[in-house]
Length: 593
Image 1: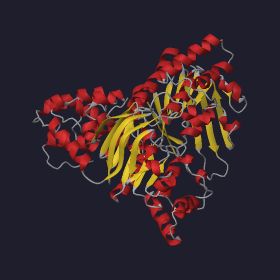
Image 2 (image 1 turned 45 degrees about the vertical axis):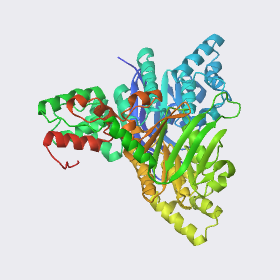
Image 3 (image 1 turned 135 degrees about the vertical axis):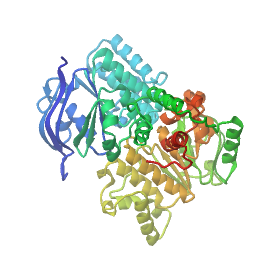
Image 4 (image 1 turned 60 degrees about the vertical axis):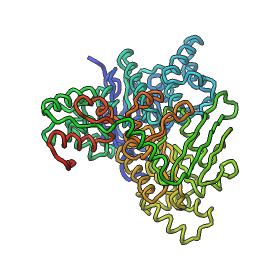
């Protein structure tokens, strides 16, 4: 019988000044070699629980801890952090908090070197881990010059190089592209199964968690509200998932909706292949009339051309090349891209493909090495960032990179004050921005850093809305957020877009791209390799694979069910549900659950 590797006994933890515990009476036992995933909405206590496991709480982070945490036989109240660190490796959700070396390979070698390992073994681990996270060729780069996803990969490699007994991961793939995300989960699973490493991971990636985890723990308001195998949680606890705003695999949600209409008889599927088998059986047994898919190449091409030529060109890249100082290769190469007024454009692509570099050209933070960028008729080579900011609002991937004022009100006032708006206009803009961003007036006097990550992201949005720019550029707006918060953020951007504003967002969340974008530009190795409406983009799996992109699960399902009359290019669960209801029940206007 497996021994317990991690034990939490009646654990309650309260941060200083908090009116309620972040964790309340938690009992948890993790067996040696088990893979446990922790899910929950933003602020549910996931990160706090993980910080208990490496001794950060109570030795580094202050607060009141009740109960005992036993890790690898050590009581974390008594053991010193260096002793605990010999058994536990922790990957944070923000990679910048754990990067300490000026060169990538030194960062990965840092831990093994401190263990006193032979030089040859250190080098072997460095090479192996960098290959695993797809950073080969970046060994001599400064980690802080890399993209957010590449920084995350460096942090993952650095912890893996330590080969800890217990691997603790806090949103380890939140900044990674879809196939990179799958690769990291697969890697963690290999470490778990091949080498017996105990893995405890907090994450939102339900499809990967369903495939790889042995057990799932659902937290809400610091308490365990559900626990069990993936099949138990994603079938029997669907109501709790919906109530707490946690996403389930799309095929599981689809099957649950169809079950309510008595159209799905078998167990709720967790994976795409399971869903394909059952859906094929349902469609064949129903003898449904074959539907005709709208994916004729000529029609797609006409739609693509029409969408790209309607409306005024508000941003234009003409033969743009860009190279970072001392870099050998271009970060952007031969970019020709026109963005129309009022578009809702998604920039997608693998980590390091050039998405953030391209977006920074729009606000003038970066200037082309060759070529021209025009924003609302202005040549960015001749304009300062301050001048462009009147037209373009830019949100960084990490909101903490742009929040610097002592209070939320000062933060929201900063932009419009610099554009010489009148006090009454500034005041009106602040309250309008708060409303759109879903923020309470009660936070106006609080320092931004005192807020949760989701609220800080909304404050960053609101700080731009206050001066009402024509263009909104936002880099990874939903990183590390739960489904409910992610949808709120995207609805906020949609509201901004409805007002006639142009929205450009970078994302690795393909479900959100499919649901919200009107056009998608796919980047790979500094080039735009596909530029079309989402329906067209997500049927081109051959091209997407070049940039490590995988379509949403429901789109993959549709793309593989043409033999049974399912049209390729279905983008959302609602579209698939409507098609199946019309096909199986003969309804013209399908109701939605």
